[in-house]
Image 1 (cartoon, helix red, strand yellow):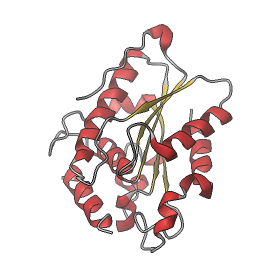
Image 2: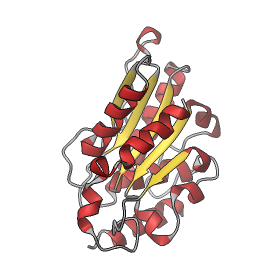
Image 3: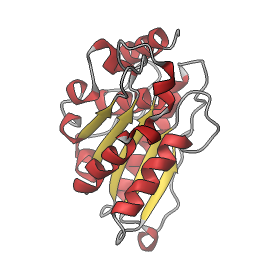
Image 4: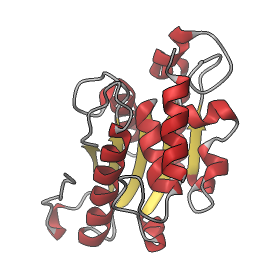
Length: 209
């Protein structure tokens, strides 16, 4: 039910094959940032994700930081959110198993934030989500950072939605961003790196490592 609600919320507010890491124990970074890009961004971690990773590296100079781009369409077919959730969850679980000392930061922007909503609020499989994370995985996730989260527009930020991860979450909504608030400034939705909220989220993540 949680997955379905998130997909419906995403569709409403925007009307306006799991990967397995190959890292050996010797190749485990201190920090891995698992990030889901926003709608229509090309494959990769996207502009917001890159800004977050760069900021974390700058703040945590003595730590090795690796990023992982969640594999999903990020298209206007929002059912692809479930594909992203399956991939992100599988990556996180595999990293936690192979690199138990690696601290994981989970993040997402816009539709990617909905991907993060699914994996952090759905303890059971359903509606295409096949890879729910066992509660023990939470011990490996240092922080969660989401930007322009559609569920926040309905007054349900991830800090409230997720009993297990809410206290670890920085749910960032730019001023008057219509995707995560009742504002009407569509330009604000693409200005997260410039707004300073990415740096705030990076500091939040580093403080929780």
